[in-house]
Image (cartoon, rainbow, N blue to C red; front, side):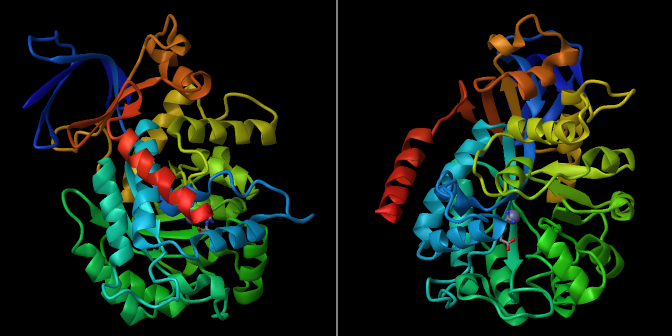
Length: 449
Ligand code: NGQ
Ligand code: ZN
């Protein structure tokens, strides 16, 4: 049994003073508030639950910064995707494990304690299944174990190149399954999980999956999370309308039984009716503001969605830059830039933007990954401490603490990060950052040589 005492900790959606946590077997055994510290407690000044990263493609970390060069006058999401397909073309399971472990180290250092890995790079470079169909899923599990991060594995079903069952492109060959092949892959992946890892199903997008296949996938995983990319690009919305007469989120809400198990990744291009209906569905919008800016996707109507009662989680998606504070900051700034106003992701009852963003991402993220949220008895001991000596916290008070982290801290605000009761990050650095970083650098150097 380990004991931690915090001057203040984020319990039940607010800062509470004098918080003592007892941790046993990776879980929180007791939470006391308003208590004094005792001999033997490990003491910290501010503690908060780690966030869920609802959407990651781990391998894409290996190409971060390599697609920022203009190659044609109309560089866009689709030309970026070609670069991304060329990067993944020859990756081995060992490469995927090395790159993904680095991404997960950065996630822990950036305030995330669990990741939803939207995993679609399944097959060998020729597009043939490995002898173990879940070999690549095993690489993800290896990366999560090496870093310590919690894992929600989301094996992706991918069968078509566009709406209406269009043939896939050669660059997509490593992603493709039929339903039977996917069922074997899914079950083989499940057997690789341990601890509190869980699994969900991820139809890649309405571009890649037919409606019949979607129904089969849902029956394959009747209780876990369901994640799908939706309405990220305007062209995708137009193609969906041409195919079905409905927009992607509209189609899903009308035809797929979207409920609290679902996380609709991006949902960038939604009209007012879709905004209200998505909010009412109980599903989570999986927002990835840094990637969405990087790829030129557009701006999610977050203020209207939240006003309608909508839930969201945040994801690092392409892993171009991994940092929970940066995702939340980018979300607020996208709303400010488009509405030419300030302090938007807040309300009269919850006027501090940072606290409001954090609480919403905490709850929405946990729902999206199928786990309970926050620091409470029985839950995984996944928490973060701040270094209150960081200049951004000067003269801090509880109300503005999260605003200072999200808007003003650059780097260095996070001191320690515990995951399942193990301290993986100390003074802002992962305990195995040296070893995992060296393997990562060698891997990427080899790929780029
Ligand atoms: C992905 N990523 O699957 O990695 C996608 C691009 C697609 C993002 N959307 C490919 N950020 O959507 O077809
Ligand atoms: Zn994605």
